[in-house]
Amino acid sequence: MTTSEQLFEKAKTLIPGGVNSPVRAFRAVGGHPLFIKSAKGPFLFDEDGNRYIELINSWGPMILGHAFEPVEEAVRDAIQHSFSFGAPTRKEVEMAELIVEMVPSVEKVRMVNSGTEATMAAIRVARGFTGRDKLIKFEGCYHGHGDSFLIAAGSGAITMGTPDSPGVTKATALDTLTAPFNDLFAVERLIDANANQIAAVILEPVVGNMGCVLPEPGFLQGLRDLCDRHDILLIFDEVMTGFRLAKGGAQEHFGIRPDLTTMGKIIGGGMPVGAYGGRREIMDMVSPAGPVYQAGTLSGNPIAMSAGLAMLRHLNEHPEVYTRLTEIGDKLVAGFRSSLASLGLNFTINHLGSMYTLFMTERPVSNFVDAKSSDLALFGRYFQAMLKRGVYLAPSQFESLFLSVALTDELVDEIIWANEESLKEVI
Image 1 (cartoon, rainbow, N blue to C red):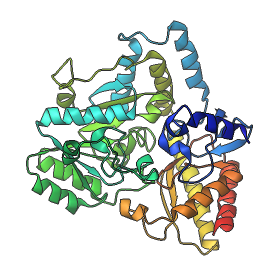
Image 2: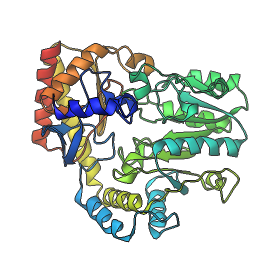
Image 3: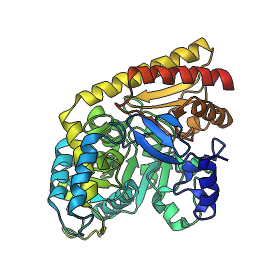
């Protein structure tokens, strides 16, 4: 029995399912999870000493690769001054100033500790600002484990087979309306059927949690127009796309300004950090400036702020990072498409910049129903075949993969080779 297997067996006696986040359990792909001991640059190293090329990057944050020296240095410096104060610090102000500079729609921002906290707070603020109760989300989009969002949720909820979680009350579910992603007409019908009751429309502008799914041309602008017409707040969940698709996230890439934006992942440089921000008059509803209450003992934690500042400053000062990420993504996906063609396969690859998913379906994937047409058993075999060749993928078909600038051209070639050999093995 490997060390990872031993640790997993012990963990199952102490932690629900043996993991602290469901998708890590490998139930969708078979086998047992790998327990990671360390990571550096583009590589993970497990407790048994195996090395893997990394294509998850901690589900997005490690856009510069693991253990990036400026981030490590910032954390080393910060820990000399204590780990937490529960009081304001200079770095919170510097972080807020940098976010406002980088993200087009954000005029004020509040720091929290996770993407889930950010989305929960954003919805509360939207309800407080509009005086309305209902929200529209999209099937397969995952916005954390807040009660309002576990209605046709994505990612781990899909993988575990429980898209609607027990413990979410019927009353909460009634206030959450769902529409298919990329379906403007469905959104318009929901708005008409719930006139003057909808506070917000929330979405991942590029979905990461049913696999990578792109907005069709005109979809985001159509949502912006509908929200403007009906006095509804548009919320972009940029926990995954923020600072990844561009310095200013998906909203910069597509040129669409939401009213509120939620952030996480990259914003913390790998530390547990989230944030939400938006138009000044909306954010001034947040306590103590306004009546909408939201608080957090560890919000603005100085260690997390130090890591996040080092990460964002590097991205802000080095726009060539995004050029390189696009080059890596384009090269990888071109290699995958070439392999599919040579093997006579017509699987779907969705890709934008440093995000991509290979779907085990011949159907184009533009929404949750399309994503669910994937052959999940085949994906499980493919995952194990890639793992055997030293490539670490997300253990779910319903996840985008995230690339980092730590990947060299030689490593990209190795991934392309592993992909083709794995497909030969499993088809």
